[in-house]
Length: 197
Length: 403
Image (cartoon, rainbow over all chains, first blue to last red):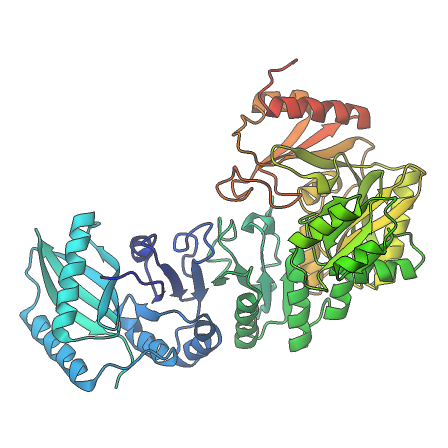
């Protein structure tokens, strides 16, 4: 996994924001009006940003064009299923490259296959946000029932990279659910959030 | 339906909160807060501030882009900008979107020290000799039998002020500056005491004004130092400063707003205008006035920015002295003043700011009101006030009572 300089996260929880912070990258938050602010931004930082935005398509698109495009983050990733579509919209307007159709098909097939298998019942379920650029994958944030240790996080990063390499994903944000038993990371489901071909 | 108001905020968020709650008239307005992370989100209640943009507002293109998006998206009707460095941007946004309030040409009168002194001098009010400083050649044309001050025309908080009394020294200073030809001025150094006058203006009339006397020059701020002022209860000099303030505001043509004027009192008893800002006095002047007169100049500035009547003073001073003493950050972490000594020293209020100073709070102060600790001190008269702040300074450095 490589370092990612600047990334916007849609709808982060405090846990997601806490996990994403302080890893040598800029994290900007895009939240619905009335969201928590104080616990999401990094105090005393010139690079920590947060914008509350109406998450309707038209208002969100105007925000992307007027604010995000000039600030030019490297990408936008959503932390919940509900916001994947907006992340894709934002990445498209930011000029993120669309993945080839064949890769997207592989992504959908692999995700469908794993979701059919389902999650092992007793394992701890986690969610990870990753962002990929030219085939290099960055683990942005992980949230789950309990915080991961440093080595566990490294292990998850390596396994998710391997998964995304299998898919052949070159660019874009991905939300992945996985389980962790000991050192075994099992991807349960994964959603691509970048521009569609 | 509440009126959408853009609040362009560079201070810690606590500035918008008074003893009775938020100073914004929240029953009438929906705030769209543009702020920063240096105290700007501390204590932010998302039920009050539902719409927030936290950005690097120190970069004007970013601040402008965010503000323009908010104004257009939400139909903002008024802009509140309390920090001097936000005054011009707010005025430009008002002009662009046809919003009421301070417009760019007038805002420049309160921001550009050359344009400001030109307008004030034209009204017959004494100002220091001054000129724009566009090149090193300008320095050679000055009379070097006197001292001068080189400063940014749009400077704030006595930042980047250089006192020079030799042309070679001035050339050295100039060589270290960003030599944008329109950025600096040079003005005559004026010896004497300094005063401030803080006013509320409604419909072009000064409806309130209070005079304060500095006990240390704001331009002399330094690591480990202390500064402040006290409110002058009355007297001939007080009355003359009030009148000078009225004439300055009339000359600059302000209709509605809160102002902070600074003036020299020369040893020969002449008052000389220094500068005026279209915002409440900082560094605790607002707190001092609120305690003495029972209303907030910050609240007045907010309400006037959105076309509402300001709060009125509920009392005039009783002749006693109320002042402020601010301590600048230092590499030494000093013990501060024990609360047990507050009564003895006349301390009626203490504010600690952990974002003061460059870096981690032990770096040098960034400007003349960058206090790490600030105290309001009450006294019976100016002499007792002087004694009390001397004792408070010693106590701050850890001296025991009676030392």
